[in-house]
Length: 266
Image 1 (spheres, one colour):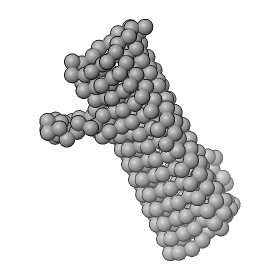
Image 2 (tube, helix red, strand yellow; image 1 turned 180 degrees about the horizontal axis):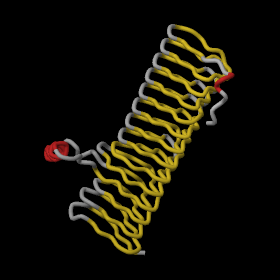
Image 3 (cartoon, helix red, strand yellow; image 1 turned 90 degrees about the vertical axis):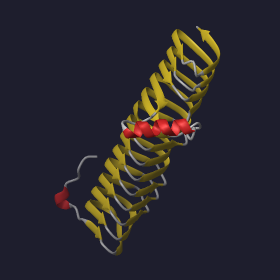
Image 4 (cartoon, one colour; image 1 turned 120 degrees about the vertical axis):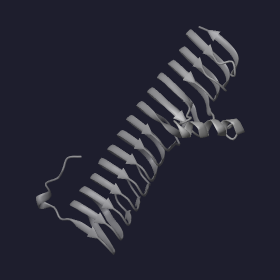
């Protein structure tokens, strides 16, 4: 978002309870309980209390460390959420960081998305996606690059040119497609890895699997996965997988602990 000339713009501030009418602002600050009534455009908005926006909001920089509700569309540049945020419309940003909880009822479209908390959206389109928390997309997810660890649930197609993810809880996608696909179970490092081994030994994580109907890519590497069909040029099926059909072109490696019902070289 291009910065509007701040020398000619007013500021809006709520430190108790109040309302800011729609318009164009330099900076808006809500540290109490506030309402943005009407469409708002601002160079920056910060919400550390409780804020509700009743119109469309466009912000160059947005920081939410409290609770925010956007009843229509939200757009702008760099958005950072460390509190709780709900967007009832669509969301279009250059970059969004979520270390708290964020729910978008419409499509989330951003150049970069970083999640270390919890993100839920209707659908997601991005160039770069990094997750170290939980992600839920109720429709398709499209990303050039998707890296991280944690858990994801994609109820449509997860399409990523480069997918490298380590899941620590059950993860699901109806279909996964891309060039390089590597989805494995995460065991941590050092003490966390030892603790993870102990949890596996007790059998507490036997349901921590990746589930999908179809996974298709040039290079596919999986473990702890339950998948109906896997297609790829080079396929590696690691430990504790249950695969219905594997169709491969060049090579297929299967761990002895995994079950593949049918193998077909194309």
